[in-house]
Figure 1: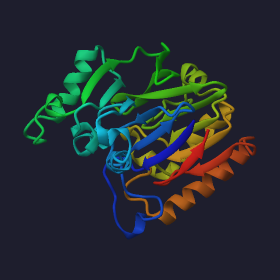
Figure 2 (figure 1 turned 180 degrees about the horizontal axis):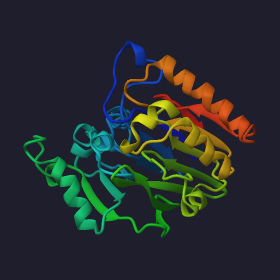
Figure 3 (figure 1 turned 120 degrees about the vertical axis):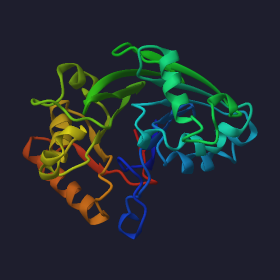
Length: 283
């Protein structure tokens, strides 16, 4: 599998000269499987760049298909959908998996974004591409795009956000954005989801000091990310979902502090990368 990062920010986009190196788009990553299948995780504003990159291939001809994994439907994770060019091309097909009590409820949540008060598109059915929307059963693995996927909900303020484990052969990738753990850190079920992952991409929104002032927002600090990575014995930690007010220099400081935290917790052998737009990583 190969990971490509398209958006790294949380809450709102943060364009400008102070965020040029890491990028200002909101959450979106893509995985290309060994067989060449495409899996998109979250649909923040980073989805625009991904969409444009797909146009020279099958998606530009109406012959594309992809799996979309949606952690939750906060705006910074769905804002890119209405500007994702492949969805306007007839013939393209997307299977979207997310968290809701039923598939119809999940589709209704997405349709809510298309309300004419918020969007000129009005409905998913006005898009050229077709969507198959499916609710994830927490903890129950399913097959999509030729790989095995498991989703479990993490606490995220007053709601939850799905973390996903994607497995292909002996390689595994875990996406755990938008998580604010209860005291004690990840639950046993979540640690099992993370366990031994080749790459863990984890929420790293705040410093501990800023997190303490914003507990109700449901995000992690670099300490939480390092704790989860070491307790789950992952191979590589990728920091993600930086606060919109953090300039590139602030993210550099987060990275350095996270490296020190990993080492102090016995995780000197765990690789560390601060995600930036354009990052590609072999899994």
